[in-house]
Length: 356
Ligand SMILES: NC(=O)c1ccc[n+]([C@@H]2O[C@H](COP(=O)([O-])OP(=O)(O)OC[C@H]3O[C@@H](n4cnc5c(N)ncnc54)[C@H](O)[C@@H]3O)[C@@H](O)[C@H]2O)c1
Ligand SMILES: [Zn+2]
Image (cartoon, rainbow, N blue to C red):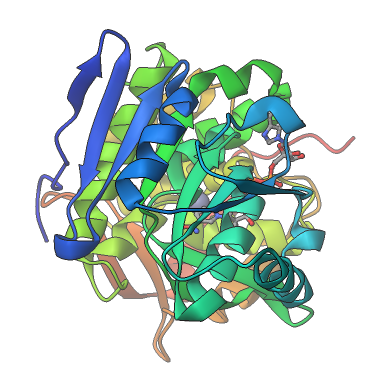
């Protein structure tokens, strides 16, 4: 594994606008970040050569500027409940009624749930039509809108049906964040905090555009080398093995970023228990997570054995143990076959939230 992860370069394209290229050969695209970048949408649409646009927005009508071509505007709602195949079908039907062709463009505006469902509709409509994402939550700007994974939920589980479909551009307009509720900031910080340990350190206290740019540069560099999640991309799941288990066992009472934050603290402790890192680096996990105002303790009432049982269902787990992304002398790497007893002991030693 690489000691230092590949970061994509961050270019300055205007005084306060940054651009990160996602290098994927013919499917390469820029991620532009800054206050007001949404206003470059007409240029983006012109460069695609689209003659029409279908705009799907979960934000108020004026959140998406005029794309410069005749446009269909569709209202959407953020949230897991609307991340369904039924919504993908409904969107595609509206695209067809509007006469959207393969050469046109779909534009998404909303949180990660909206960029996911609209991204999948774009992947499927005419077997693939260009899509531009305008993510509006911090989590969607640092993570969900970049990298080309799209998906919807089934009753049997989250993100079970999806496709890889890279956008043609991503415009992360930090103006959108002005209305973001505090808990959604925390949600996004969870992903920024975990980035500290996989190649984007030192972002605590930095301006948000810088935090987003560094997190995107990290993800872009990883995706450019492993678009389809066959090796390096696993690294992005730092803190996520326990994070996912916590989301499930608390029935999603924890936001994803909060669960990942607790998972990140745990990843530090587990790496310490396995002798991979020393006490200072273990402590750094707690300091970074708490520095962002993120939760660091296991919720009251969640039992280690229950968490291990859920983690055993993780697709990366093996018959001989659990799999985690853990820090070590060679940087973060996928560590399979971690003994369950070691995991149980590390969980038992975690800080605990007081019962309410
Ligand atoms: N495709 C990927 O690679 C990838 C990566 C990470 C996460 N995801 C997906 O992203 C989703 C989570 O994204 P999310 O956290 O953005 O959830 P979300 O879309 O539900 O948005 C979170 C909340 O923030 C609100 N919101 C969004 N933008 C706002 C704004 N500008 N002002 C005020 N409120 C605003 C939404 O209405 C919602 O209540 C999950 O479904 C997850 O599976 C996908
Ligand atoms: Zn995540």
